[in-house]
Length: 147
Image (cartoon, rainbow, N blue to C red; front, side, top):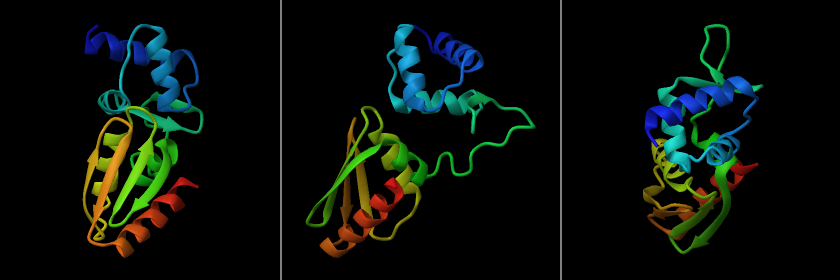
């Protein structure tokens, strides 16, 4: 199934009903035979210029305002992070399936000096910091974003 077909279906779905979040949209696509990751879905949403409003995703129009911070780390952490565990100077962050890479990229884009780097798999992110103290600071910051 092609990207064009998938993106056309996404447009149809958001026009037909209120789609509150990416997980709901992913499930709707799965019912139609499109098994996509959250990262692919996020790219599709960007390419289609969809905006997320208080009523859910919709096509971009001049009179609608996107939710502030839609692509921010805080938004992605709140929506997809399930657990944060410390292990010395490392953090292991569990996410919803298919969400680790976009969350890791968003965390990287924050430019936190305590982070040496991140590695995002399918549902797990490894965050590497210089020391245990910095890992704890990052852990607290991410847990705060989850609320």
